[in-house]
Length: 255
Image (cartoon, rainbow, N blue to C red):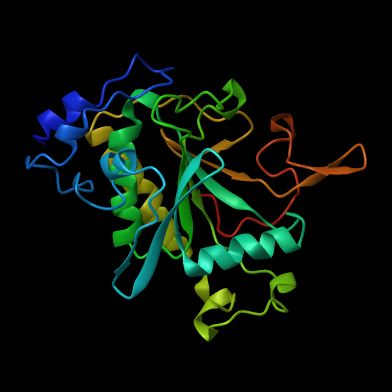
């Protein structure tokens, strides 16, 4: 993979770096790039995100619409269905199942890891969303505590539950149903491919996320549905484990 000039323009201080330094003149360089990752000119690529932080591009791939959003210290790629899913979780005060895959990546490797996983995400037809921790060009991880290490990239696992049935949407295809869930085989292939590609490109892990359940060298799983702590609904404490709410996992964990 010979995107040398782009690589040189993205410099970091080590695994706990909080800054990326980018020369804007190098972002759109016509260099040979790996087919495993988004090209620098792609609207969802790490380079494009740095070039215009507040841009909200969208694109359609194989009939699936994907959009980019930058909010709350995260950059997200999400389908319209996933945005409805976010809304549904809000209406239930985050007490419904909130299963996620976390991908552990050292900050210095985040640009390449994002481009690899984002390409896999959209080209596989994933119907949910993904995000990476990203605050600003000068302070990417200033908001990122050690308790969050190992969750640098998140992939949402859409799971239908009955409380979503009354939710009204403008378009019929946005109605949350069980048919929108991905099956066991889809996720097994997806997770295995993440590990294969990150190892192939020598991406370094930032360690297993505290409280998560490991699935492979990079990926872990966690249900972040809120639980009661001292009679108050809260984000589940890490010490409560990967499934504090006790919800049924959307697939068998056998890999």
